[in-house]
Length: 164
Image (cartoon, rainbow, N blue to C red; front, side, top):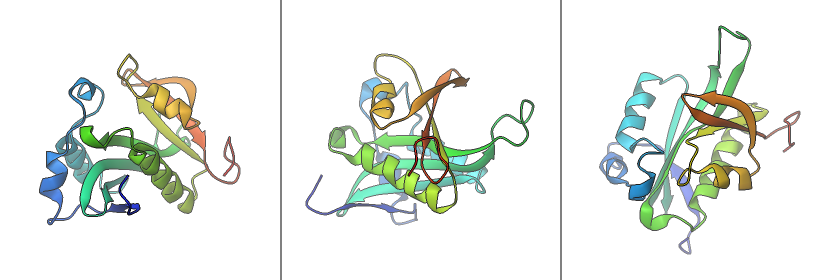
């Protein structure tokens, strides 16, 4: 990371072009949708999507999108509402510098502020998938899948599985 602290910013007309230009490593493109796809989803799911850019100083280093209080599987359990990390893209040249951990922590803090007790994430399994990264951060596999992806959960607040 640079000498400044990373921070989150909303996507605005002033930074949207930089956001759209953000690219992950080529071998990761099968594991995460491009920012343009995520922003379209954020627009379509405006009530539940929370997209943010990760900056270090004036440099854009990543993109994240959280989901807030969605009905997970209404056919199975209509009361099962979840929040979590929907998308995480760290620019190829910025990976391995702590920005992914910062982004996950920022989402955890925002969800805890909103009263969530658990934070969910799903990931593509496989050699270049981010499963090891999420497990190192404390996510535990639930045994569920979502669209073929592995689902993990992390306790984040009072009453959460792993505390605050």
